[in-house]
Length: 480
Image 1 (cartoon, rainbow, N blue to C red):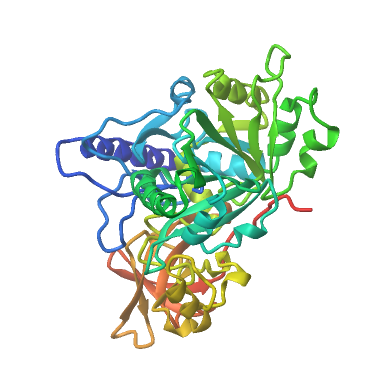
Image 2: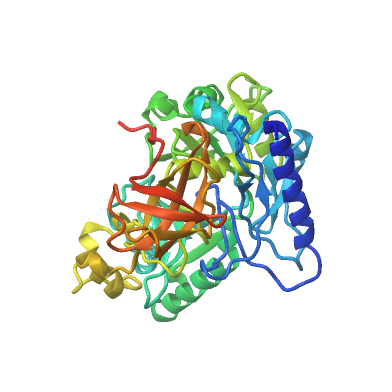
């Protein structure tokens, strides 16, 4: 089978399964992508069938790559502010987290789009993600209860990856990036596939806080009037810099070379007619690909066309910037060792089990004073890692069919009687590594150390694998 036929087979399968998803039946909850990729709270043992996308073009005998998404069979798909733009550029649209989202575009295959992002710059529509603003005298205290991060140590306009934690268990309710905008003002983004669960979770926590401290202690807004795009790749800054309007800001503020990873600024852009945008855009140096880049929150209340204008300006240089969809986003984030909620992390895992123990602030690890959700469980695991039943690890798998989600991981100490020790949560042939099979998995503690040799059962055949450190592709974040 040629690589082109292989790509077509994967895309056709996506279409067929997406159509089947909308047939009358019980509601399905499964997921895709982040931080641009997102999901629903499904535990590994109870996942619904998912569509698949084409495997990397140019990788010999690669099979279709699974793309995960969440969509209700009983509700119409929502559209982002950029839906018409996607269709105009020949996007293949699929259900994802309750939205109709672009899988890939007519001009580039999945692997070509993946490579373009690693070498140049790509634009991802992530407007399906949920943007929040929390303010008031109780905002910081509330966030430090539901997350384990040292948010009180964040300087204004800086951000951190964190986790919303389940009360009692310390399970990961969702992953999120939180930005401190001022003394008692915070902006944060959560996953689209967890929208219903997260809103209910946050409402319950905020209502409980207000009942003790007053209705005015916290103000919470879900920012429905803002689009969100991610510009990712080594040429992202060069592509964005000419758009920044410097009329009403200092040279230092408008110079993107001084905007470092994990920081943000409110900046106006210069429109096609030479005027400045009526409102500033929130430009954060962050992303979900491991590359340098930005996430750009674009207001639409004053001008609903502003997101399209921004993208059209960026796309003027076709040799530098292209549109990219969910397929490339998934393979990019996996190479970067980044988790996909509902697959690599769920409420069944705590941050230490998910190799995210670093999100727990150093000054929040004293059991006598720790007051965040699940603190007793999480701090006990950090103090005694051997008590954690399973750990998230990276695997490289020998040549052949890739280890997909759900593949079992085996202890091959006695090859005649292999023992199941874990499960793969994400896996594919890495486009950046010439098709090397990579995967994330949870394995029993003791088998999580780098260099440990294990087996992975793929299509009833046991393939050799090795536990490795993540990421597989080095991150290229812009730092001082």
